[in-house]
Length: 116
Image (tube, rainbow, N blue to C red; front, side, top):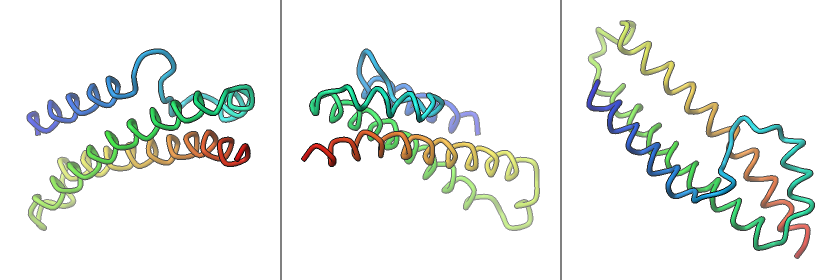
């Protein structure tokens, strides 16, 4: 499990690096704030932010897949145990992050679409 957490940390850092400098993809930034910002951005800026969210989503999806795979490796007799519960909790957290990032990315994509 420790190796997995190290791997997950490396993937998270890779996602941050892929997102680039400056504004990063945030799953906690208020949606209303993002909508206001997107309305004032150029199309190139909107595309850049959408790409940053996509990079963050890709990193989260890799983490989610790794967690799901590790859950599959747990014997059926231990699926109600502490390790399985911890993995399921992590899966729920990452799934929530994916939903939040997707919602925010879609704001930028909708703004791009509205300008075409």
